[in-house]
Amino acid sequence: MACALALRAAREGRRTLLVEMDAKGSAAASLGIPPAGYEPVVAAENLWVMSMDTENSLREYLRIHLRIPFVTRLGPLASTFDFVADAAPGVREVLAVGKVCWEVREGNYDLVVVDAEASGHIVAQISSPRTIKSLVPRGPLRDQTTWMLDILDDPARTGVVVVTTAEELPVTETGALVVRLRAETRTDVACIVVNGLEPGVGADAAALAADPWFSGLCPEHARSATAAAARAATQEACVPELVTAAPGVPLVRVPVHDATGRGLAELVGGDLP
Amino acid sequence: MSPRITVVCGSGGVGKTTTSAAIGLAAARAGERVLVVTVDPARRLAQALGAGEIGHEPVSIECDGPGTLQVSMLDTKAGWDSLIRRHARDAATAERILRNPLYDNITSRFVDSHDYIAMEQVNELSGRGDLDLVVIDTPPSRNALDLLDAPRRMREFFGGRLLQWLTLPYRSRVLSLASRPFLQIADRLLGAKFLGDIVEFFTLLQSMEAGFVRRARDVEALLTSERVQFTVVTTAEPAASTEALHLVSELRARRYDVERIVVNRVEPTPGSPAESLPGAPEVASRAQMTHEAPALSALADIRHAHGRRTATAARHAARVSALAAAGARVTVVNESRADVGAGALEEIATVVSRG
Image (tube, rainbow over all chains, first blue to last red; front, side, top):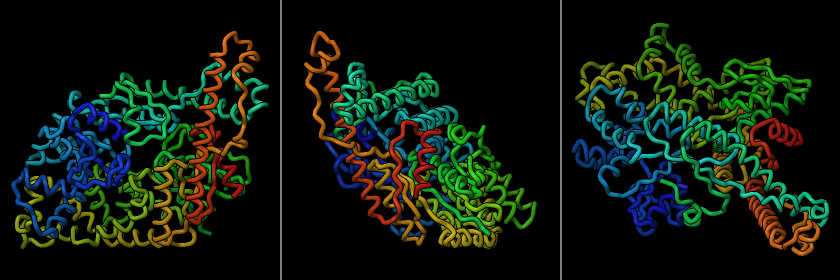
């Protein structure tokens, strides 16, 4: 979904950076390019892909913000990094979020799409500047969190797109995620994408499938139609729960598809931010 | 007699919690005394099991069988608190740690910390003589392997130079904070007060090193023992099954016993794919339609629905054979209409007990 959003924006002529947070290279694979590193690589016209790496982010941060020259010996830097990341809560997260915010602040791209990690982690990441702010009484890192929060808290600049499927557990988790995002961060939830919706069959087809004459003639087709209708109904029944869990958040429906990346970009409707 | 332990792992959203409950249910029906420790407070699971609410204290579940089934929820915070109390030199040290401003953050925010406590639970429960089987549902890690490496990382953390350096200024007053370049950078980043809090916290933690390291070693040893078996849960979708294959090979590389792979939500292959559909005129006359258009569109709908199901079934079958090639026993659970709920739970319990 992140690939689809990024591709669509790129095709509309916006300079877009897609940031892969989990470093598994699945976004790159979905776009049909080799895994990207910390340095952005071109995936298509107007589209760059990079993979988050907190050690490189720290290195860049030290160079840009503290004017600590490029550290050639990896040893001390790696230890410092381990120290910072393991010992100080929120630091690993803030380095990742900080890099993303930095790209936004510098205006290097028109749109930065972040393919985030599993839902449990995203709240920790988005709230990390606030965590740091509450734990660190002063110092440059605290100052940095101020402009990060300006970007993250501004609904015109940052929005979370929550992607789910219309199934019981994902819907419950999505509801819980939206509640946590609203309680622990001030970042706007832009929309919820309901992916993989079964289109079902029309009323005439459902009636035909239920006709004993038809189901006697071609039982497997009848079964397929009945199953599709049943699944569509089950999925549809989950949607009100999403609306209740996340009041006021627009829902974007995406039908079931085999597409990844490039194909999906065609499928995604027009009302995404 | 110590209980056998089944650790249920896999990526998020594949039905891990339901599968854990189903494994427990099947064993209880076969006459065993079972405890399922879940990490997921899903209300529907509690309902499916017929329990009001599942809390940190084990709740007994009706299971229509000779055995007993209890379910409880993993409590990360309480797990850490009791670890600290157990390993602290004295009560005062424990209190100082529990009151340190970093403590809550570290125990609640670190993904790793859930992992460590889950593994710690394995150790804790392995001594329970009143149980035959303990089923541990694992947290949705970013990477399921983090879970298994948690005890080792905890041990390395305590044994590592990092903690030595970090606590050096406290142990030896000769060296001031600023005299070490790495602390200097950290100091500029974080400020001296925060750094002081961190150093105090980890100095206190370090006083518990021996206890933690011993404990982590115990957990590691237990995981490779023959009492512990792993069940990998997945769906037949590409991302989940690729992750599952990776997980199986990594588990084996660590010499853990992967007892079975449960593949949830598999679309069974349609029985006779070569059916010929009736023509639109035939359908129209049968349904007493005045035009053929609705008949045509109904037939097209059905053809598409069947095409989707056949394609999904073929894709799933290919994934199931790839998983079967990994060598573990593969248990296939067919697509059920309910995702979490009594239906899916019963279905998995039945399939699992069949073997």
